[in-house]
Image (cartoon, rainbow over all chains, first blue to last red; front, side, top):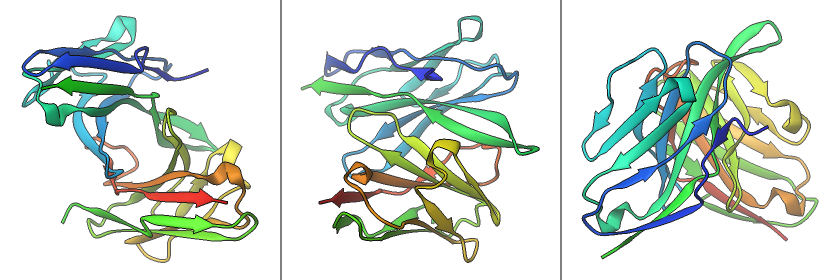
Length: 120
Length: 114
């Protein structure tokens, strides 16, 4: 079963609008981290914002913010004042510890991504 | 310098031939990861090193090998490439095995197997 689900494979908005990208996840861990990354055309994955499961703070970084609904195992990325350069593929990721051969090691699981097109 | 560098950026390989991809970082990060990314799919974790300890995912255990001769370098080795290995390979590093920060990714190595 997929651990991270991004329902929408594509989205498009006009420049200046606001966009919400949804992500749901599955974990049995108490402590975990959620990330949003943007995949550039160059191939690089760029970190955007992080949410820790134990935090109730509303995370924000520039034009990026998240809505974290822990009980629903959902995290949404909000991008305000969209610009054409925001076009790209956005990935939601879940980091959790997993028992492996007697040691607890962390793994980062990605969703399939949502392709965003911002129309000038 | 917070960059992760990958070489080569593009690799063309024949079926059955070996492939070696290189990754380096100068941030003194403990952990280095390799992901495989195919179009319209989620990046898939192949393996990662925490310090000198290699951890390979169960479903890719026999398909990929890796070495980390020092803290800065990590390689991904395919002994005999098949068509299904065509993909973008992303290397990443993090400060420790519990990323309270984030993973830093390289630009990727695009492998095409013919």
